[in-house]
Length: 295
Image (cartoon, rainbow, N blue to C red; front, side, top):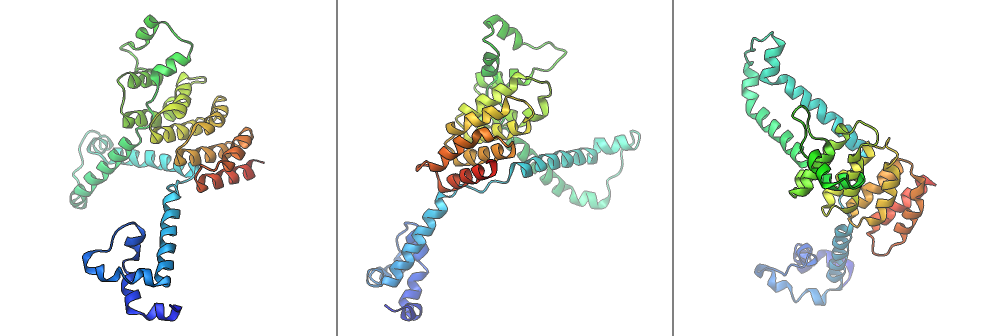
């Protein structure tokens, strides 16, 4: 069938409306059953269907687009600023600003209270979804050198005057065991809580990146380690973690992290990843780009 006749043929035009469903593996509905005989006899419709199927396969092969690590750091800073503004605008904050005398809420603020409530709920959801951090307190303690059981029990019982360390919290989460969202939350908190050099929680984050069964937790551990890049253990750990990852989102984020940290030691790993036939094309392209930026 000529191209012009394909474009003007009413049967082709009617079938074209159902080609996306056919390309997605869906059968023709009863109201379009009369078109089933047209497809085998129309090469133009067959070619259009084949193009749609190839397009759908290519789209399915692409991992979700992830923002750069720098952008996510900027978002974390913005998130903290907005949370501080919300705290200052709360009734307790307004009372403190007027020497203990509460301020009457303006009429516009009273009207907007449902929106504020919804906005606060959104922040709570964000905080809950950032729950990536918790993964390996016990492993963190073990990595410190295999302390005796009595010493572990003593560490798990903090003095009333101080809060448990991040490593202890991660270990407790591993014992319960913690859910993926709880581990995510602990991992996300790590960069703000780790301030001392050689903190054992860094080793726990490294172990989380290498072994946690949940790709979202591993992704959060990678991002947390990038924010702790001044620790000399982080760079080599990210290089060693690359061959262990199979999730495309974690692979792409890890490659981005290695480029951000200018880890030239990762070049052989990236070159090998770029040649693996079982890796998604988007990951191979990211690995090739990483090699070009690090050489």
